[in-house]
Length: 537
Image (cartoon, rainbow, N blue to C red; front, top):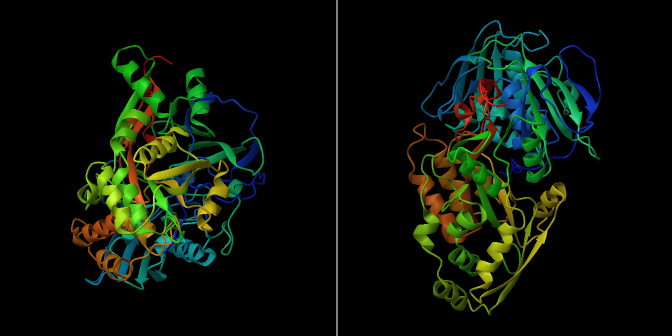
């Protein structure tokens, strides 16, 4: 199973202006931003291009989808177990977790007034699997053999293999339900025509300056047709995309945005937090845990990085504590496993295997494998909150041992970067991962099976053919035996090295409320929680 990185900027869909009822309009952004009409404006550097649920699989697009579409199930704030949304109830009908039955609530409608029924659920799943967009999330539903509607309010999923994780997958944006009367069955829909049933509807999309028809600003307003559990604390929400953390910080300082997500440059976020604690800031920081992770990935088919001993030596030398402290100003925490802290079954496999950085132990890996030093290889990167400092620090750590000679290169074009790692063009490279759902499987199946989303070329048959299938059968998701074995196997083989896990530092004006209520490790930012209260503007 391979899937694209959730932070990837995907291939661009054409944005065509339309005046159809219930659809968005597209305009060319003139630059700058405001929060006119009382709208709350949030900035992010999680740039995206495709918003159709069948082709959208990155943080920037899912941020929109989680607020404009509904799924059968959803993750309420702070929850790790999905709860009913469009569904009134859902359950596996047998102990083998091969059949999943949902009963839908009645009277649901899309923002255009069309009724939402079981036929739309079936259409949405069949459509995603038929389109099978290479940059989309269809692989999340790979265990769905077929899905059928019984009347308007019953849906039955028939699985090809046991999958106790299906409820969590359906609660993600991959489970977004689309209107079968609007969306084509065999191709993606233009961003301008999107229709959902979520708490917000898209009013307009302004393209960013430059090529590619990439959204620069998305304006949302409350969906009057919405019937669900959430209550909106604002009537209008604007999401603005920025290319660089510095641009995001400038917009915050100028008052062009009301809040920034976890995209600010680390030292800037840390300084705002310090100023707030000292009573010297007009901003406040909502701080918490996230499930966002970052890895140094190896191309295991490469002549140099293909050596397990080389990879183990790198793992033995990396100083994550220094990265977290000196590069990221403690806005991240060291990560010692492919599964992050806060997620069930997390362990510290890399620390248990390698401990603290040790040059002598690293040298032994290379000597035992008869590898001459210094080992020369190239580290490639594209985007990082800390910019070039991140990999320059990794380079210094490795070269200080005398065992490595490292060249650092940047590929600033994210699309080309993604194409590069898929083609096996890099020896080693850094990539981040944002969770689809709060379950250990979301860091295992997509990342370590058959090369994973990062296309590192590594696969262990025991992991992919035995441990992963066994683990996703378990309805008790707290049972971590198989996941512990997988994490330990990854730590030994080192197809990638976990670097750190992000902390959340959402910065907002002092009069913005509700940010604390939506910061958790589900990766879902709930626009409806955000309000405007008393305080400095």
